Image (cartoon, rainbow, N blue to C red; front, side):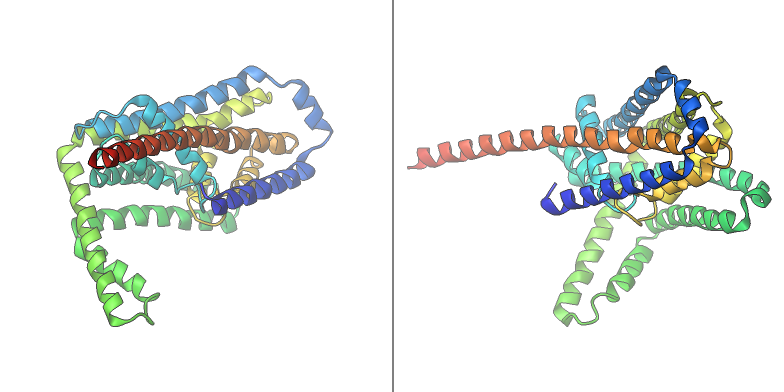
Length: 353
């Protein structure tokens, strides 16, 4: 990470801490102490362990999707790229943004750039399809309870879900019709290139055509030659998201509450959709406020703040720790790699002399 990214990480953490402090201020009361006295650490440990298991599911998804194309990527390498990906996701708007890290790490183990890009993009497509399907169920359940929640909450959430579904449909259509994607990108880029010279615009247009063709070719190649990879990818996508969603229920049980599995899953799906919208670095602040608003509907207000703090400690702050750990390993490897490369180059120069 460069200095600018570290700055955004600091902004993200500070913003998150401020929002958490405000949430705690407005939710802690006398009953909170009673709940804390009944705290069951075993459930919190289980939540942390389950989070690590979900990271393993994500790593297995990458490994199996790569293997289906004939590339044997070590599991530990996949796990470390997932860790490093988490740090970048914490500084980019929304919690997406770590895709270049995963592409780079696949490329480092001899997966061609086109196939590496296709694998990572298909990961996101599978995420979008799953969240779209279970998000539809969540929206239906919310619509039934619209009177209790209020249309001011239900309608914006429905709109967000439609955006996710629309993106997946648009993506599928653009893969089948690459010319549509070319026209769309050119139209959008045209808004920013009005003052460019004709030669520069012509070069950009040519680059767009080439990149879209390469992108489309890689995806079609993956879908046509790796149906088994898609099956494995879908399986581990389901396991990943369901394990991540169940963490909140374990935290609630640790606080002496019931798991509220159905309600919690609906809330987690909505939060996941909201966090995909690029508003703040790592969705910092957005996640805390969304979780507080949704869980306050079925969890005692005395522990909502404590719950949100524990939830973010596991799914955000612990992710940053894992991300730094993974990034340090990558940086050390790259330094050694460069030193070896320079040494070989120097030896070759000495032979010539």
